[in-house]
Length: 502
Image (tube, rainbow, N blue to C red):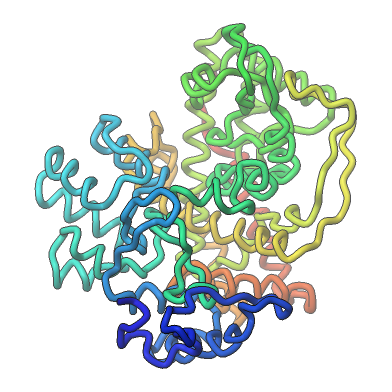
């Protein structure tokens, strides 16, 4: 039915001489499957052009988008497990499952549940207006589909080709290799059937999004490299033996500490229960790190408060109080960044990020995978296409997470007190300083790259990549404005009024 469907009319080499569909082609010129490869590439490009998809050739994932749009049924059977799944973005990923479980205050959702199942669960826990507001906030790009079909599964079925950070597809794209442009196996079977998605290979380029989420200082790539080396050991908090220790950030990123290769080995349960609260031992360990290395473990916005109180902490209660104060500072910091972002200062904010860290690899000498300790770090250049892609993605994720964070209510932000409410003059002073310097064309280019509009993340990353590459070719004339804005931000956070004691 697929091979004969009008949606695939004109597919080069659709049938063999005996009338069977030629389902697969290959890019290997020495194989028998190569004959129609280039012709099918051209066919998919023409199909994307006909559909009016942005970009050229296979840019912006347009071949796969076209494959999902023209598929006659939108449903496919996995040739490995036999499960029938929607071909597009129709399944909850871990990020959305965690978000919705937090909203409904129960662990009701798991990754890979379908939108249909999710809507039933939400219907039993939220009222109609609550569901509509939630879905619109998560999926604004589907507004026209909600208006036409309602806040029901059909809206997602009709828009399953639209990429989103909250849903996973049932099948990954594979044009022109497969006739219908989709892999033979579903995403549930992908890990076991695609060597590139195995746990071992994924570790080579998976990175802790929290470093970007919190705009943390520190060499995030080096810290992640050590994080991935965790092996069997003993939890430092409960003394239980585990097959793989869970590296605990001794200085929580959510409290403004750097993302550095300095972890405590714990079990997952202890790491999770500790959350963002520091203990007296944490404070002592951070001070010891500072004395040993001569480097502060706190990012610049939190350093003044950290330096003021670190020697005063004498109990776990005081350590938790310091955690709460630092968390409030970090909340204010992110709100300052967002105010600058919507004011067109995305280019300046990019200077606070270090995407170049992606272009290095790290080896830890005398590494103890149980204790996560080492004697020396050796680094070397790793400038590859995948690493450059990671550099771009780190910038895109940081801005995405910033926009996601500021719309959360205080409960979701887990902030006991907000300095942004008690010290609005800090945000005002920083924005006022920025407004003294007119936006340049480069500032406007960064604003377009970050705030769009873009049809998908690939388009945004292409725009960011172009600007990052451009940085290597020019010296920005507005560095005086950057320096002054940095100085004002540092002064405002250094002068932040805090309690005299914990």
